Length: 289
Picture 1 (cartoon, rainbow, N blue to C red):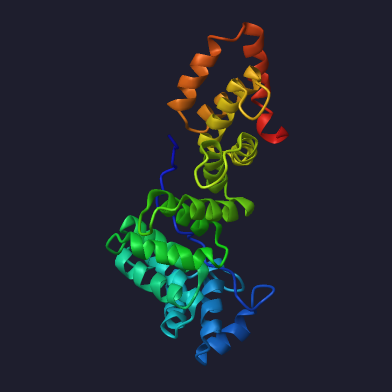
Picture 2 (cartoon, helix red, strand yellow; picture 1 turned 30 degrees about the vertical axis):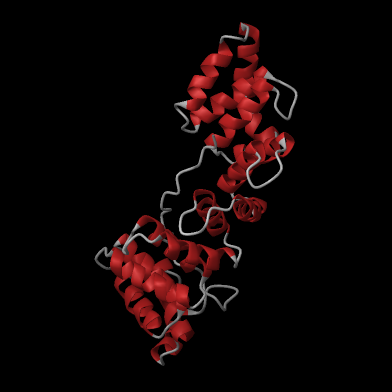
């Protein structure tokens, strides 16, 4: 049976996104002049300068003031980031409903990060009622703009049949896109699909490939599964030392159940010299793959 990673709501970034039309941070005086004339992009960039303390002292109240003005004029980056501020209670009272309102406004304008975050909100019921159909809708919009986390989460919904008809082939397609962009959980899920033969022809060597890619990025479920492949010789020559090393890494990264149990089983089949070697190998295994 496949093991899915929980689609827990990711923390929305607390840092404002960089200016959209400047190679470097804009000049404060020029930006302020434009902002005072009602230019929404300048208003947003002025908020950014107050956020960073770039050319002016940091000032959260003025940051919110200019961010709100820009957002009120429909500037998508400002709308999204104002949502972030309401989500985190930075300069305003924490309010998930207001946060969702502003994130949605940015999402409706095609802002990809906002589309991903709106999908998460519908998935988790944060500031809005849970609605898997809506989460799939917004994950799709973000996924089509190459947001890897949206691609991964859309793949999960196709696996689970939440908000969409269950379709392992489509799940594999979206996992593959996110995995190619380096998303570790998508790489893990793609490995699971190749190992189980769901939505794709079963191929242990490709399961090994994707578990390895996710494992070196610190994904504990992938580390545990990779260890199992080495322990059993599935898709690779059996190597108990390497298997034990990966179990150790998985345990260190938070897998206190499966990896601990599997390591204990393997340990009974190893001699002291192998265990000593595995302990040494574990210190360098994530950088040598």
